Length: 114
Image (cartoon, rainbow, N blue to C red; front, side, top):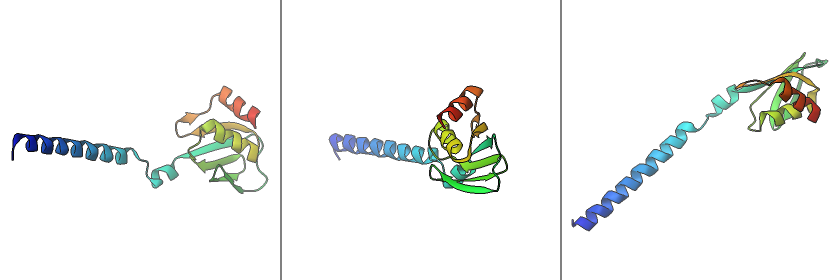
């Protein structure tokens, strides 16, 4: 092999290694379906539902019993999901995401938009 062929082979090898690393990295950052299903929103309703209720909100099944509703994280902004939950089941007194509880201001925005 001459030096030009060796350089081209080296470049190709480096590009292939970078592509492999990027692909492996993207798979590592992907959330598995099991992880996504375990991440849930929880809403406390101001007024309890009369009977256990199941409804689809943002493409996700929400279960409500008493004053507590929960549904899997749906990929939408939490505030948008809260608004749709409030429109479907009634005003919420708290809304929790995998990252924490809504502030009083966020709850006010949620209920006002519903």
